[in-house]
Image (cartoon, one colour):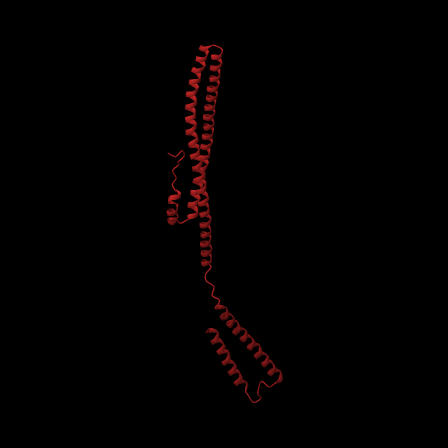
Length: 223
């Protein structure tokens, strides 16, 4: 069984499936990254506790081993001194410390194996985080592309073919103004030269013609 296992709403195994259904993949990935960072933080706290516990088990086993060695020497010294009773006491304690040493060595082995497993899980979480973060950068770039495209579409399509038409209309307007200005200059010259009217033409005829022209201009304005 894993030392550290935390169930998440989204895992790497089904992240791609969620991405295909999500309207905002970047937001979904960010949620996954936040969850993974929390997992890594909790796993590293647990690792710190396990590392401390493993060191304690090792220390207990080493202390017991030291006492076994010490009581072995004391029993030898007692026998050499002819103190068989003291030698038995020393050997009795040696046996107790041997049992303690075996127990703590077993606990140390279990704790150390769990610590290694936890290290592997932390490494795996960090690799997952980096891989998904890379995906996040890719999807973020895609979303930016979509948003820019949408903004461009909102501005509408620019039709460059309207430019010549615009200048054609402007050219017609300028030509009309030029024609009016030239016509007025010609009329002023005729008035100054005295060649614009005939002495035989009656004023009533001119008035009628002038009135007809005014009426025509009025009709043109209404149209």
